[in-house]
Every structure is written in structure tokens, then in C-alpha cells.
Length: 207
Image 1 (tube, rainbow, N blue to C red):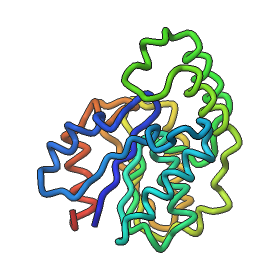
Image 2 (image 1 turned 90 degrees about the vertical axis):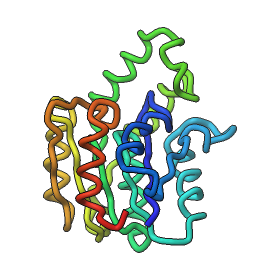
Image 3 (image 1 turned 135 degrees about the horizontal axis):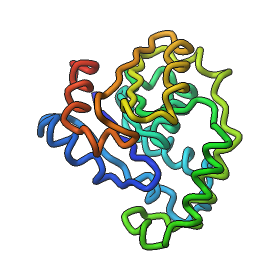
Image 4 (image 1 turned 180 degrees about the horizontal axis):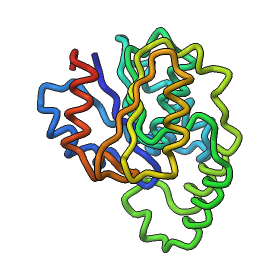
């Protein structure tokens, strides 16, 4: 089973390097550059999902999707639209209904940050602001019943902003399980990569 690692806003494929190292060289995993997949398409969520969907569809076998924040949104959306293709989900700091106030605050923070802060990402400040604004109306509540695979919901102990949504999502999915990573904040893949790899191994023994 191929494992797709999907990075968050302000991250890159390299954000998973230490987690992959902990999983070991035999893990069949890919870390797509989500923003690179967009090419010249306008940086809005609908285009991002469409290019990600094409990328996953090129993989013939069932997949396990592991995403953080933005990556978790894409993974959940894909599992709703293609439940037969997804064997397992690992959703880190997920949201199933976009918190408009939180997105607005995030965009305000982005606006105040210097452009060089976004150097690690393929997207500049204006593109990230446009992308997050395009996500404000996302609401997956009506589609969650179509997610039939096991879903591991992960949350950093210090990630208060996503705690409520994570706990709610576990109850809304038919096979949802919640795990909290001690001592970690929002970016679990950077802050606790070894523990994250351990939990993924337990959840996906086929890896």
C-alpha cells in the first residue's frame, strides 16, 4: 500500500523527511509538492484539489493518505469523493468544516509576515492568502458518511486551535480513532517525527 504524505500551508515535501527516516527505507511512500502540482493554474482550492486528484488517480492501487492541516483537508475530501480508493486515512490537525474566523486570522498573520518567510514554500504570500480565502466555504459534513476506511485523527497536545474539530470528526466518521501526540503543537511532522512514525506504523501495519 502506497502512503501519500501531504504537507500543510507553509510547508514543503521535505517537512516529512524525519518522519520518513523514522519509518525506514522500505516504506512505500511519496511526498508530492502540492503547490508544484498546480503548475500555472490559479492558486485556489478547487484547482489544488483537481491537480491532487489527478496525481492520486495515476496510482493504480488503493492508497493511504496522511495529511497535515491543508493536507488533511485534501485527504478527507478525496476519501469522500473516492471512498473505494482509500484504504486508510491519517489526518493530522484536521478540519471538516472550515473555521472562517481562524482562516481570517491566519490570513491576517500572513499579511503581516515578510515575503522571505515563505521562501520554503513554492507559493508566495499573495498566493497563500488567495488559497486560504478560497477554502472558507468548504464544509464536508454531508459527505463524511461516505468515508468507509479506518481513519486515525492525530492532534498535537498543544494544538488548541484544532482540538474541537478533531474530537468532533472522530465521532462523525464511522471508523474514526483519536490519538494525541504529547508535547507537540500543530506541526507534528516537524515537532515529533519519531512518535508520528511510530503511531503510523501501529495504525498501518501493512506499511
